[in-house]
Length: 212
Image (cartoon, rainbow, N blue to C red; front, side, top):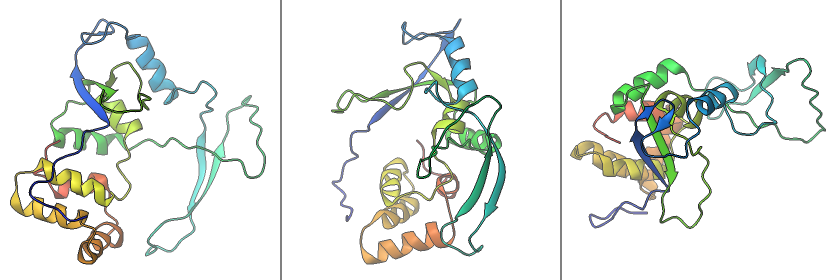
């Protein structure tokens, strides 16, 4: 992909709206189940009632420090009475939590209050109406800590999108360069993201003129 000045930003999959929550209800949605459901979500960190919460008892890195990708050995400590049954070849789905202090700094950097509520909904123009997010408003703290992947290297598409949200010419040019599919662009992207192991969180601070 090569950028052109006439390029336009694609229609987003999700709409994010800041809302006010009073007495457990959003002023934007009368169908919200209120604060109790928010507490339930935070307590379980997901919406599948069959999920089993466990602690990581062992976390060892198996790859060398200079490896492009890490491979880890992880052991989970299951709660008593979980009665979890599994067979060789079964897949475990993990729901990690981002570091709260890191999330607070990013929220401040982007101009959000940590206790602010937002409602994430499917854009009406999308063919698929299935959302990965709850119907109820959630706090920025929960969104950043449990829902967003902030510690993975960003994709080239991520850089192409960010380029639309800065007026700084130098930053816009560099973001477009990282998002370009040309040979030079791919090399620059690989050096910046993978060789130096930068993630989404760090990119948003490196390009501090981006406002999203």
